[in-house]
Length: 236
Image 1 (cartoon, rainbow, N blue to C red):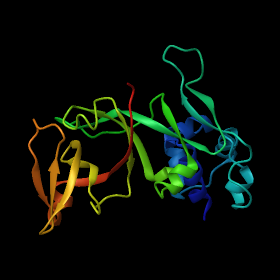
Image 2: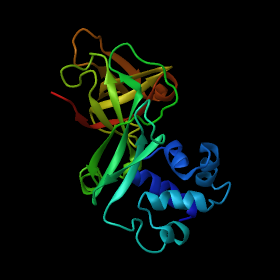
Image 3: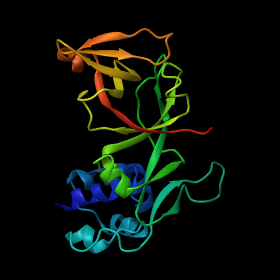
Image 4: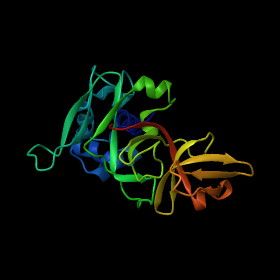
């Protein structure tokens, strides 16, 4: 594993965006992206930024030893607007947990849709046990994305404002479930059911929304499956 790979693994384990790590390290986002892409070698400022977050510098540089040097880790989140604090602040992560940032500037619609654009982490994150991610989902934190739902087409199963955890590896409907689809510039969260003849049936839980059929042979041209919903959380 190269140092660029270790940077990606460390960032994913912390549940951080490239922008967040860059600001913590005092480098530009583009500069940090060059580190992860292998176009440039990370300097001391980038290594120091990860050390502040609990990452073992020796592991980053050589791959030897444990990734985390202490019993707690940290993730960074934006300071409240109008605050005199720095733009990003540190929060502790208990041992055995990982923080996944909630990206809520793009909502996954279960109704009319939303335009796809750039995503940045919000000032929220949820913590998940690493063992649960590994054993129950057979996944790594980098395989997952945490976002919100807007719209009512999937009620009562999913409601507007729900947090949903998406497994980005599920790009083909190998089992029935709730999937995230992109159709043009629209993101949709829908039930997906396999049908004979290489077709899939797309339905909503709300009977006001009509089902439709997609041909799997045209799945990448007519629509793209982005992942499968594996967990949902909501406020009562």
